[in-house]
Length: 156
Image (cartoon, rainbow, N blue to C red):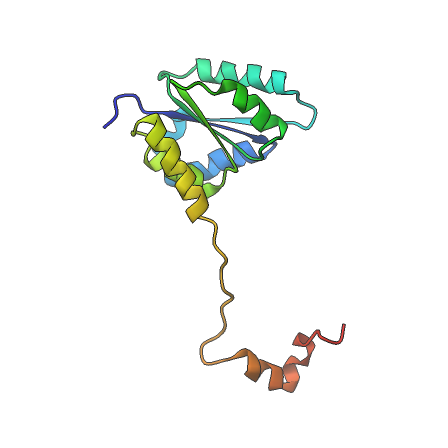
């Protein structure tokens, strides 16, 4: 086990950061003290967000941080990029729940490995999900059923 468990800072457009922190608590309640959330209002500047993030990070016991942001090029990400430090801070953008949960699951790993795992979780967590149908009922059968005529929207 890596001796310095990384902390996670979520910087995202309000109220996404707080919502993601709450979702993290569903599965990783014990990690609560090592997760910080910074909700960024639409009026915030990157300088303001960076200052707030540094204040949150100063409260932590360990030096390593994985910073997760929502959208590349937006204010939360622009501020987070200024926090990046090759020794102690990695920044990933495009945060989603699989990324966050993977980061929390492997938070005891070295920072580079943790960032790689979190990124993998984000990518592997995005899937196209096929619609489900009741057993033994096909789309063709629904289309032939006069009670389902309202499902045929080709006339619009």
